[in-house]
Length: 185
Image (tube, rainbow, N blue to C red):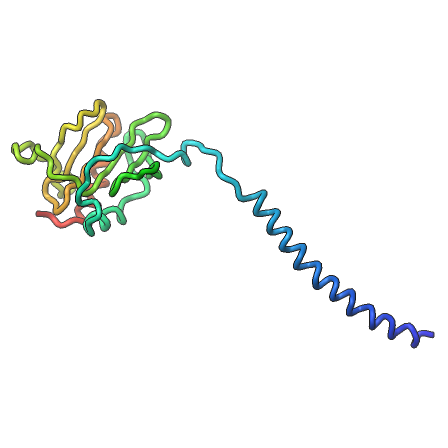
């Protein structure tokens, strides 16, 4: 009697294996689809994910190799009197060759623009401030509560707008990058 049942078990075993072999991949695919629907969601906007809107200004040399080189070496964070501020993602339309740090919770951001036109203040022989080997001239941007500085000695003009209450850390950080990336005139 034992010999007569053995062939039945052998015949049923492959069917069970085939059923398991077909069911497991189907269950895995279904699990991946369900997990992707549940786990992949748009993040809830908060101060870190809200894109910062920055006004566009003329930057005729924004597409230059000089600006590309400078932008690629900028820091992700910079030290200020308020503490460390992080580089922000800018809202569309993103102005060309423009980067910003900070600006959370209603504070003014630090904004750097590369490829600006020659500032008229350079023609008047204005006072130059040297920071980490880079010559800067303060320009009148008409924005209260901040100062805008433009490089005076580089192949392309770089502007940096810094809120009055943030200290000199940003101009020091950007000066290091400018000195490395841009040739002086």
